[in-house]
Image 1 (cartoon, rainbow, N blue to C red):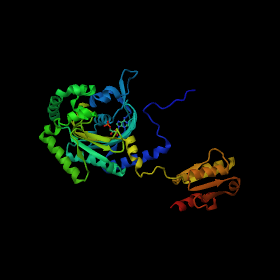
Image 2: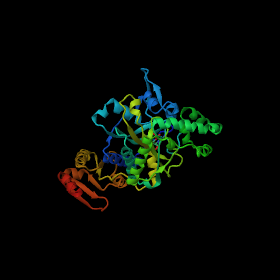
Image 3: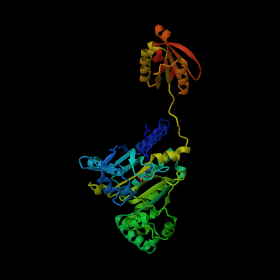
Image 4: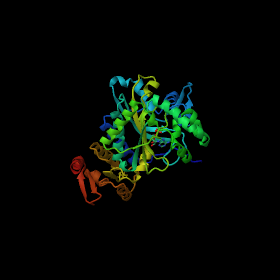
Length: 421
Ligand code: AMP
């Protein structure tokens, strides 16, 4: 029969990889909690309109990458392609803004985009991220970037990543800049790709994202968005830059960084890594002051970032994180069917005092059970056979020291409590 395989662009995360995932997840949750952020978990699918209204009708995500379907009741549903929209929907739906003038939230989970799979780009991938609702001040932007920096430092990635920073300004700034940019590009429009020509009509700022060298050369002399910043835009951005210097987070101002989604306003940023090849964006974010209102809530400023977990793990390949979970404490060797109930009962009690215990379920020979104990790098083995059942004993073996002794079954918990304290 034909073997079934995972769908293109999706991956199984196998037990030998899970430990790194868990370590990264621990680093993320500890860092976020240090900054007073609380975890939120949203549904995997939402109404399609949530994403088209927030991410933008003309974005790559909405035009070609969403996994959407019409449900039996006629509702249009989509597997979430990003999480800021879902978190914002939840913020509005549950009136989180009424509970406190500032809401600090973080998340982690799977996302779905029908992109062309390559290294660091999948169709089901995972992100962690943070969102802060309520403050429009540059210290809030600084806090968000500082969380990202803390996580990168904990992962030993801060030296090989670069923070690219820009401000795409207010609506007023962007309207003027859009006109200026179009005026500049117009004479060269025939030299631009079809994608860029389409963006020229729909979302000209995104042309600045182009990877084509020819287009980049033309754009070298293009007007800069910072020349169109309002006084508020400039003072916000200048304060952010000052604060980042105060807390020693290095950055590089990149006038061409615009980020792909419609909801961004003002500060945008991306951490890029030298270890990732073409897909070098490790983490990206920005302000989205209009998003809560767009989705039907009271006007509330917001800012956040999202980072790809798979990309973090690729970038961390050279880092010193442990690849193995902590060792097994006890392998319980069971000799003969009669010993089964004692083995199961004592194993359960030992787990009750916090030990990690495996007991054999294959009814193998003593030799192969001990081989297994060594392979799993268990610290100790316990053994019960017919003699031990009759005498109420259990044989204890320290597998690294090779020491063996007989212990009364009734003393076993005391014995391990003393041994492990
Ligand atoms: P975005 O939501 O597009 O701003 O992406 C934020 C981060 O998510 C990126 O910097 C990547 O690390 C990660 N990411 C985005 N798309 C993918 C994908 N298709 N596969 C793997 N990681 C991704």
